[in-house]
Image 1: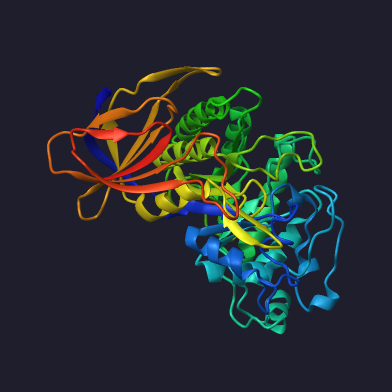
Image 2 (image 1 turned 180 degrees about the vertical axis):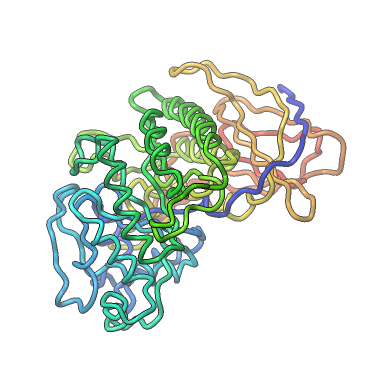
Length: 475
């Protein structure tokens, strides 16, 4: 068996808990019929499915993004506040069907509170206005006697919602989507006005500007708006794309490359903003601009009626998720990440009329959320290289984090589905290992968890990494 020496180096920055966020959208049955379904026998008095809530709570997302996503292009928040009988039901001309107005701003915030998550709201730049976005901030966070703060109280919410994180549009660069902001200069012009209306209502909010794979777009946006930008958004989806077992790992290599390029770009902007006009009447950002990877997952998009969003995930996909988590956690610039989406739509949780259960990709998420926070530690190791249908990829993806008590937690993903490897972690006592494994194409069902979880004690100089498995090693 191939033995790979691993040596631990110096410490870096702390991983942000916000990398374990989730995302929900008015799309297929993510919200309507997933999270919210008053007709379900699992629903509570508020219409929330408690079986889904229980599984979502175990994921412990620290931040939850809403209402989109692309549906943001036609979402008007005032449709879904106040008495249910006065709310407006609109056609969902983006994804089909209708937008369920019973789950609106107040219900979203209440759901976040039940999860222990910070709410993250994306505003409508395509068919909305800066004033509408500013009014949304006032409704959520206003404390005075102004109209929208008073309206929230009239709806039964005396205390402000204190929504801190606001996305200024969603994938505005995408020409096929509704809206005119796919011209970067139009996006810059409009985003500046949205931020003004929003920050004048609450100067403390954090703004997330739209970024993408086009570095010229990213640079133009930040050159113009970096004093007002707390985060730059980036979305990533990998896919098998007909390339077989290792197809998605080509996308993962692209993710690593993009994170590196985006990190380098953010480093070009000063940590402290100077020469910001006081006539804006709100302060500039404080601190470095960070990355918000506020949509990421594995998605085999296609031209079917559901666009492949009703994904059933195999264990191979869970191995990809574990690899992507290592990549995100290793990047110092990433402060927020939101897996898309939490329920039913390319999701870790599936729910139907009979109940809810976890897909394969939930199991690495659960273990990472439990064990992988701390201070980044540099690693020195040489991974074997696999020759695959999408070119060469590293067989191993490792991440180490130091805990406050000095112990190390090592997440080791063996992407080789045929061969085991041995890690030599140096001298010391035996180590504890939690191993997650399954056949590469195994799929979990409501009545069958296909993922095997083992707890092992292994010699530090001979930690065996099983084929196609995720290992959590505690030193």
